[in-house]
Length: 307
Length: 273
Image (cartoon, rainbow over all chains, first blue to last red; front, side, top):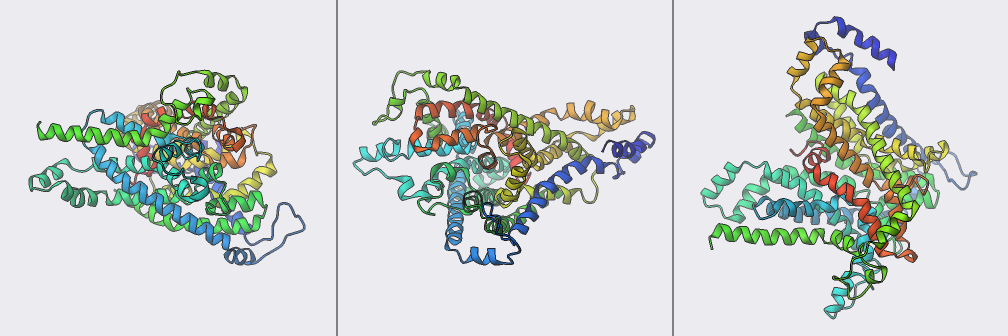
């Protein structure tokens, strides 16, 4: 590595300053480490996952082996648990998106207004995003949603209602609430940044023309936010497709498979059942799912780099 | 009352109410950390009580907490340092000597970040098992370095682009060698950018819970894994869990509040300005 750098930087000492900015050769040794490492980190393991998905491979049973063809896939695709996990994944992504983008937009508009102590209130509102997932999941599970000692149970009882057993009766919904709480600040932060880039003259002009708060929201703010909202949706989707820690510490995917998403199913298959082939096939499906979103996201980022 | 003042008061009320509701779980956790274990699970819940520091003392005295916190610090800082070290040359080259493929390269790097980690869980787990990297700090440092590398390259790239080219040009005229140019001119000029990049990277490492839960058990386990061990139903020590959690999230909360703006830049890959 050192050798390449020296030979490559040699001409720069003799060449004139004007010429330097045109050369591209020298950038190679600077960029190469990042590219090579990322290649090794993503493409190689991905290729391995793809390879495993066509193999019989069980960590506990060395006698099982060899080329499996599409058998892992046919087994997986005819297994109802995959479809349950898939449905749970999409259900979770959809509802977290609805909650975070919906409330995020309203809160962004709210925090765009002048009011007393706004910056402190905003700090409090974005705080959940910085709480590690295992902490937020446990705080919700134990202190808020616990059916006996939780705060929600206390509220329910004081209203004369039966306490809700959140993780027993509504496991997936409970996970959705926790994940939405964590991601709401993200949507708020991004959308607030976007709103603040809105031209104040444009807002003023609309107000002069007699636009009320509702007309203002639907015809000025919302169209302006369109791009930011789509970015929030795409980025959140990519992360939400593989929610893991929140499920791991609250429900462990149960009861049954009620709160198992694709990420958790892969984890169960691979590290609990040691079925590498089957888990890899599910991994390939997860990658394909994320890539559908990623293509759109990359396209919209590309547009902005060009600016 | 003047309608403008009235509006402002209404916004103040609604704004604080919303912030209060969102922040409440964190507030409740911090409050619980000052209760005794009996008060922590009392029904009706106690809002007023004599605060005690007992939980913090217990948590601090338990050597293993210090061990996990130390792991978190070493792993986050180590991975951030490595990622920055690898990313600076790449970001420098792409920002100041862009070629035809620079944009594609940048997009490719970002797209690796969009790969779901579960897609590569199995090969990484097996590689770690075979090389003895499971439950080691360096193993997790390597994973986190690579996990954050695209974001670090990307953020540094955007910060470097804002450095006026004339200054570097002038330095070159005065005979600064490329290495000097980077270390004596570019780095000091973009220090705020580098700092906020490092901050974001530390936040992401500190809170990462997929790889830490799957690749560590005890020796190298960071706080995310340690806190997860409280999920066992027989180990319900809410006050102690709260104290441990409060210490675990406090530094990151401060970092996060400090770097809000840069966060938007880093997390949306510049798609929202």
